[in-house]
Image 1: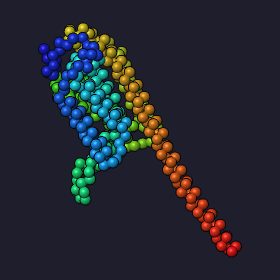
Image 2: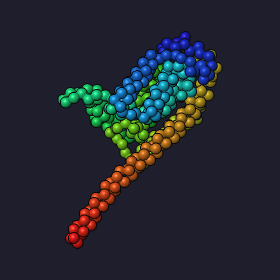
Image 3: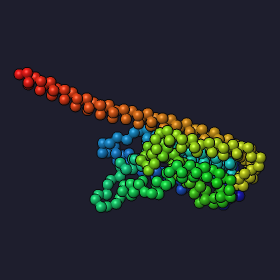
Image 4: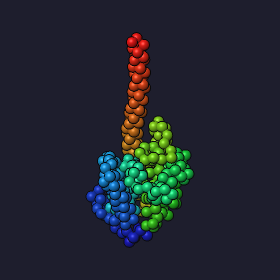
Length: 316
């Protein structure tokens, strides 16, 4: 028996963490994740070969972020997520909230700009195309808070509380597109707030915190709405397979609790990253001011020495 044309049997045993983490490959995400890790590794190796340094912490953050996506989509979590709302919500939260933060802390765009060779005068290569994209009007629009915050909110309410979610879950391509969308939304939402990479919008640290807190409450409200509902709200999960031994409404309540709890975790992570970045920015500014003061002090000392020398010459 297939579920929603996805080619996956619904005769799954009751969910446990051990069963959920068993390998079950999704070719699209497996290839995409391996390619992402390989390209990042190539960039780091290229920098090291020419004697440049790349922070180990960034490499670890990026690798863990990509492995989180792979874990969500290339294990039986993905199979159970097709028939259990609670497991699907874990996938959604990891792919849209945790993985993007770690990937952004890995600064993949900065790495690409440093590792890719320049094409030369009047020529366009991958590095030049990336710079054109970063400075494009399109990028300014999709990273602006007036776009990212409504998109972040609509990806929850507009998707789950409309027939669109059920339509996407009817096919493998639709499901993959939805998961790619979740990842993309997470990346464009968190990038202007705490991303290390250069971007069109980089407001002050206080404004970034306001952007973060503008979106997160809606995430919590979405979870509460699922928990408070007295009937199943998503058709796909109305009739879970009997082999799972679960109640649809209880599973939906669990999904709501997961969505509500997850809204706190990324907030803390992003807030910590922002505070570290703010502190680092203040330290760099203080050093610049100290260097400027030292230069001014040297000039004053030189002028004073010259004055003393002129007095001495006059006395002689």
